[in-house]
Amino acid sequence: MTPQAHPANPQAGAAVKAADRAHVFHSWSAQELIDPLAVAGAQGSYFWDYDGKRYLDFSSGLVFTNIGYQHPKVVAAIQEQAATLATFAPAFAVEARSEAARLIAERTPGDLDSIFFTNGGAEAVENATRMARLHTGRPKVLSAYRSYHGATAAAINLTGDPRRWASDSGAAGVVRFWAPFLYRSPFHSGTEAQECERALQHLDDTIAFEGPQTVAAVILETIPGTAGIMTPPPGYLAGVREICDRYGIVMVLDEVMAGFGRTGTWFAADLFGVTPDLMTFAKGVNSGYVPLGGVAISGEIAETFARRPYPGGLTYSGHPLACAAAVATIGVMEEEDVVGQAARLGENVLGPGLRALAERHPSVGEVRGTGAFWALELVKDRETREPLVPYNASGEANAPMAAFGAAAKARGLWPFINMNRTHVVPPCNITEAEAKEGLAALDEALSVADQHVSG
Ligand code: PLP
Image: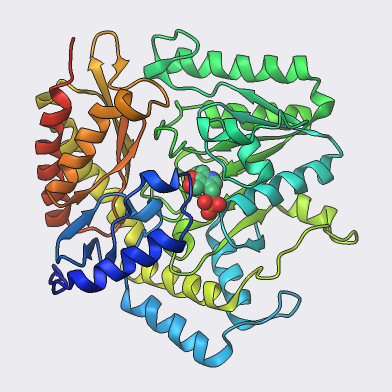
């Protein structure tokens, strides 16, 4: 069902905007240089502003509305929980929390059966790395350059992307390495098999030179998200698992973005048959309706804290409203086969549709992804693969991507853009017709990107 656009109410929109500009301090932004859109409402895969202009959300917010906006069953569950028990301290056993933990543990791979709840992804990463350090008694955590793990102290230091630079304290205990990415291979590989082998050798060498006895954990996004949706080559994650086992290193998979249906499986790890020792999640766990994240913990690591207190906690760990939203979201995902919908969307609509766009548009250097998790790498020159804008470009240097984004929005499509890429990450349950409507808008917007092709 296509929702009706909200009736225009520019005056209300102006008031929302004015209060925002006066008092809201926004993430990642020079406060005077931003112009946030005032949003009046949202439904399913769409949201709309106070002028009545509607956008198809190809970004799922920040890749979290896996079941779309305002799903009535999840909204009702939050309302019911609010009426029953709106909040309760984390030290108690509470129905919504117990049930959410049970449902998550049943779906995570292997024996990841204990759930530590947080308010979001970064706190999940903080706690996963803390657990790994305490479990092993070792100080270092290895993370990939092309990664994003969150914006709190440890998480931002583990992050590879440039958002780290301003906060990078050269944190003791963080070591970065290159994960595989054939299109821009750090190892000059020509094939996926070569990239896999060389990336594993590089990780092994890094660990050897750091001293394996000093390394607590390797953390990887199972499929890196914000950094570019690079599905690892076959065998890579199994190889990382083997290296971690060999040295007694904790393997942490960060599924904050890739988890809960996004890849057409419950977790991206399911695509590779690999079970980590710790897995972080957030976003899709309840489609972001109430902040929630967490760490799924293996039996062995849980055992470490069976008779020894775990030195970490949060006032709102397992907040009943967030957990009730997770219980309802997982229920909806089962009833409506949202995971299967994502898989079919990737296979039948987004995959073929995006590849067809790549054939028509010289600015598209590569299409990659799976399920409802896709990236288009935009380039100036397909031969040299020079990115459409330089790494971490801003201002004038970023003008081609800004023009592309503006063109998409003018056509009613809200894109996800990071550096020289646009990611196609709609709700997992977007309809085929909606997805095709988005692809048509993308087609037109890519013509703007094509104007900057020089190759
Ligand atoms: N890990 C990954 C893979 C993410 O994509 C993100 C956010 O985008 C985070 C961690 C941080 O999550 P949050 O913003 O909820 O703290």
